Length: 112
Length: 113
Image (cartoon, rainbow over all chains, first blue to last red; front, side):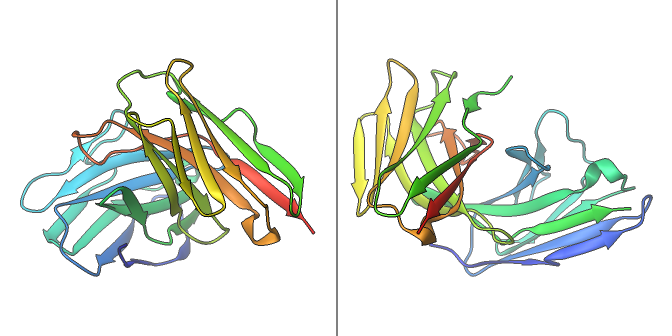
């Protein structure tokens, strides 16, 4: 398994502002993943963060809106920029390990 | 286009009985499937997985069945316990590719004492 610490666990933000979410893993991993879970929806992959290179974004997600940093093999950040109420979701970081992928506890974001 | 579907948003069973959660997929390239359990205010927890070369995988009270021809898998929990009450997500990926997972919308299981 993997121990993944994610913070903040929740936040309420004003529209138009930005929030940076941090993810710390207890051991080195090549790839880290950022997911979003909108209310009543499935988990959707936003992007894959590789150390030393730019993140790879999924269809419908762009770097200007969700910039990602990956400064080393145990840490990554996701920024939700210029927030609107539609960005209210749970954001989760994840790492692959063996047979399964492991998740942080998530960041519950509410934009008002 | 939802590639992984969990058509039952909720399921309620009595303690001690069997819980059966279902999942269908459309992408024939998927060859590895996982189930996750999620409690409120927590991240998803890996539960059990199955490769497409198998049709059954068992781990204690949890068994996953895979029917490749029907593109269908199911999770059986026997016997169900109140602590099993959570949202269960089915996920799929292509082995040998990235670790990227495609998730269903989840089924909320309630086990009544």
